[in-house]
Image (cartoon, rainbow, N blue to C red; front, side, top):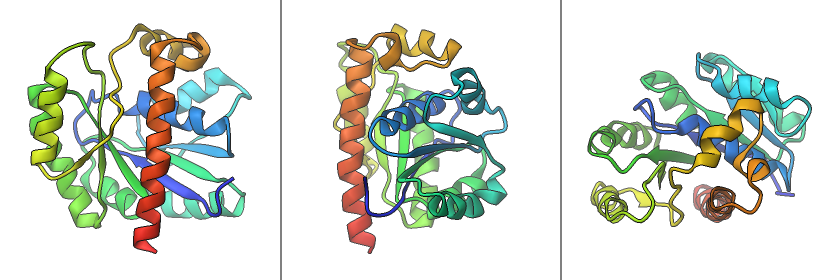
Length: 215
């Protein structure tokens, strides 16, 4: 149990970054040890649909309009949530900026591909405007490929922190969401589940440092 509610905003200005899948898995991982809420701000409502398929299993999932984010976070704090993961919409500069300003940590998924790395700068600029230091996650990466190291070097060149754990493109991530599961419930001993657990541990350490720095 954490002392106060923490908010992790998963954000990418580029579509197809794997943002929603990452937000879902982090919220579900958090729900194993604390009271977690997943707020879906994306008009496509993919995370909310996953929550509907999941039924009564945690985490709680709520679709919300970006304009009500601050009020929703205040309500979540009153309701005793420990952690809120916010899934934002791509190509929504003002909503993303508002969400970033309300975040304890902005987590930015980025595929290790040329166009994705080129588009990363737009997301980093929003974080700069919000005065938040993002943590970039190399996401949907090919297994055993030098492009991961090249992507990490490019992200560092842009001045952003890179998560130690890389999330790879794995079958479990593709199939588990259909019926409201996660990679961990689809394949409990699989590599995808292990990667999410390791990433969540890293995120908890990072968000703790960010909260203490901004206090």
